[in-house]
Length: 108
Picture 1 (tube, helix red, strand yellow):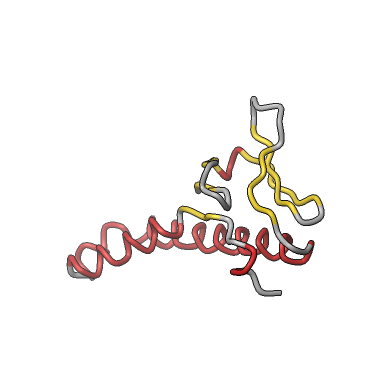
Picture 2: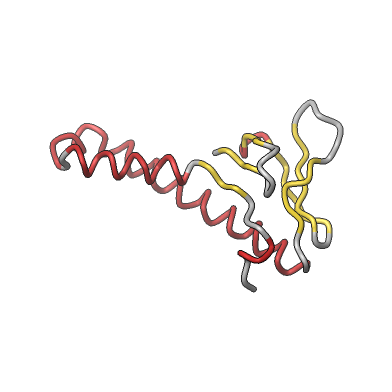
């Protein structure tokens, strides 16, 4: 899964990144990179935590989607028409990328 910073300047691989918040800022540490990377800045610690919760929820959904798709890959071609397969592919693609939301997009 790809993690995109709030401003779009950073693109990280979730599985190789440590993500945490320090008060109102969500930060990341990556393998082989000594500095902390700002992923998002929020007006409250609660919003920063909520943004991290949104990331975890999307990752969990992606894991479930992958498990279901891997077991049904052969049958999907028989069960769905091309438009339906394209719709599922788009959903997977969108789920595979998380961009930290702007402050006003997070409700606590």
